[in-house]
Amino acid sequence: MKIGIQALTITDEHGSWVVLFVPMVTGILSTKIFSVDIIPLFFLILFSFMLYKPAEIMYRQWSSIRMKNQKYQNALISFFIYGFFATGLLFYEMFYLQKFLLLVFGTAAVVIFILSIIIKDPGNLSFLREFLGVTILTSTAPVSVYCLSNQITEYAITLWILNILFFFSGTCYVNFLIEKLSDSKGKVVKLGKISSRDIHFIYHVALSLILVSFVMAFPDQYLKVLAFVPMTILAFNAYFSKRVVKDFKKVGLTLLGHSLFFALFISISRYY
Image 1 (cartoon, one colour):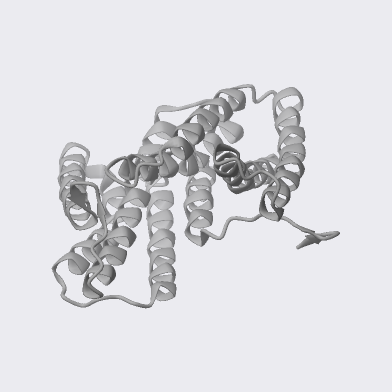
Image 2 (cartoon, helix red, strand yellow; image 1 turned 30 degrees about the horizontal axis):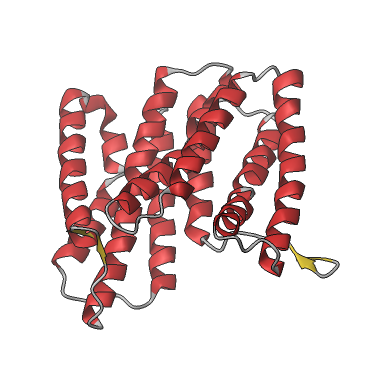
């Protein structure tokens, strides 16, 4: 995409789009409200998300005093273009549709974003950075509920937590597969003192315990637990399997399928 000799900066993290919009779909479907108001919200979320990559590039190059190369200029132009549309849509949501709490969500997202990009440590803090990233992206679930129902309900927060738990599961899974592939090539990749393999296993054991406890406490909410089952099975199967995955495009498609399954079951659970 060109503007003169400039190119708009767009994230190449394809999985992020899924983590951004699948929670939004669960939020929309869970409200049982369908309104055209979701259209400006969609574009607000889209342009706000697209600000991420230019902002990260600008910060990285500014902090390393490399401000005048083409990549920086592209990021700067992209940042202002996306920011212009995001700001206009935010004002529309706040002052025309009276969705003032969006400013709170936006401010929180900016703070979490800043924390995530300043975490440079390739060690254990990378785990925190990725968790913060998932937290930001999945906030589209409660935001959608708020914009359609005009309130932040207990269910909206529960929905957010469920989305965080699910999509961080996918993050741990991908990191584990990358480490497994690196190990097979003799390259050991670790997040500090703890490996991605350990994080993957510990997280999914903890997640399984949470899900079992949840369904025991709320047996009528079994569909929400079922939404996690295929991904959890996939995660444990990968952990105990000796097979090394090399086709990450296929991994991405698999995770997309699991994400849609999750969205389907989470959404229909609201109707039963």
